Amino acid sequence: MQFCNLKQQYTELKDGIDANIAKVLEHGLYIGGPEVTELEKKCAEFVGVKYAKACSSGTDALLLALMAYDVQPGDYIVTTPFTFIATAEVISLVKAVPLFVDIDEKTYNICPDKLKKFLKNPPVDSKKIKGVITVDLYGQSADYDGIRDAMKGHDLFLIQDAAQSFGGAYKGANLCSQGDIGCTSFFPAKPFGCYGDGGMVFTNDDNLDERLGWLRNHGQNVRYSHKIIGINGRLDTIQAAIMLGKFDRFVNYEIKKRNDVALAYIKGLKKVADQGKITLPYIMPDSRHIWAQFTVLAEDRDGLMAHLSSKGVPSAIHYPIPLHLQEAFAEFKGKEGDYPVSEKISKNVMSFPMCAYKTDAEIEEVCAAVAEFYA
Ligand SMILES: Cc1ncc(COP(=O)(O)O)c(C=O)c1O
Image 1: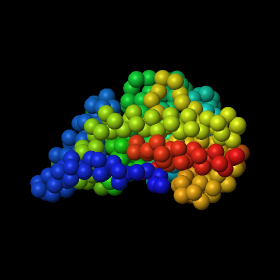
Image 2: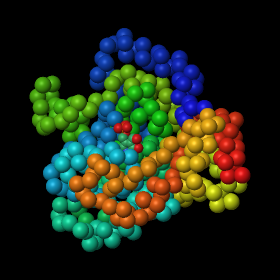
Image 3: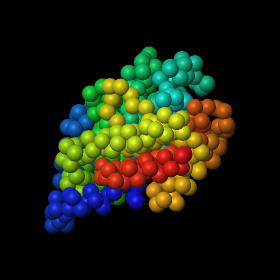
């Protein structure tokens, strides 16, 4: 069994995707072709914001967002320690310093109450705290009302790391729309992925959008005239063409199908959950999950993963080490006990195979293997 059946997706969408790629090969605008602009327009409309700029990855989307705010060495950016490293890596890349606030026990997203307390009484010079990066972990929205309330009265920007949550929603608004800048990833296994690396930044702010456009193309405003220092952060036209071939299917079918797959897992795993062997994912009311991962807390996680592997069922840990304990961040002297919820959750989380093309038989196979382990 595969973790994610992307081959099946391509088989079903082949004609449209192949025709789109052929068009790019025909017009030859491999960088900055019309497909990129078309994809940006469709994604901005879907998310419900004024502007979208396609870029080279979710990591570069976050980096571009920090560069758009001209974050300076020594500035502080607040984020969660329980995320993929890219969320905080970009903070270090601009020589700013990540400050962590622990997660909520149920959603595993940054806890608004803890954020409120933290910002009221920060451990560093508050003038140097410039912004907050939230993460919609596993494809579920963070609690944006709570986060905005916690940030009220502090002059901070909000960057939404929606790398995992494009296609999800919060209180009726599609995700990527909740921050001053929303960032997503089109990594192949993401809910809306391309067939390579890709990402996108979203904003309603005219100035930020203009800067994001320059920044992703070497700071260039007019050809060979460079206004600011930027990066090569563009999305390839072929990737945009592929995504255009997938867009309608994602919106009209895959979003619902991912939720159906998750509900089938929840049903199939109910018995072991009732026995207290696993904890099923919490679904926040007023939100639409997009299930980038279907992640549970599992008793004897290593044993269960080994058992699944022996049955040919892949599984993964998202994420085994919270960021404050990563060697790459050793200079910040994080230690065990600093963020107890993140540490506790990281020891038991594991994810099952997930995508819109999981068959009922595959889901049953996974659930049966889990039940067998705990029998
Ligand atoms: C929360 C989060 N942020 C950022 C990224 C980075 O995205 P990319 O791999 O497209 O650079 C990822 C990718 O896994 C992610 O999960």
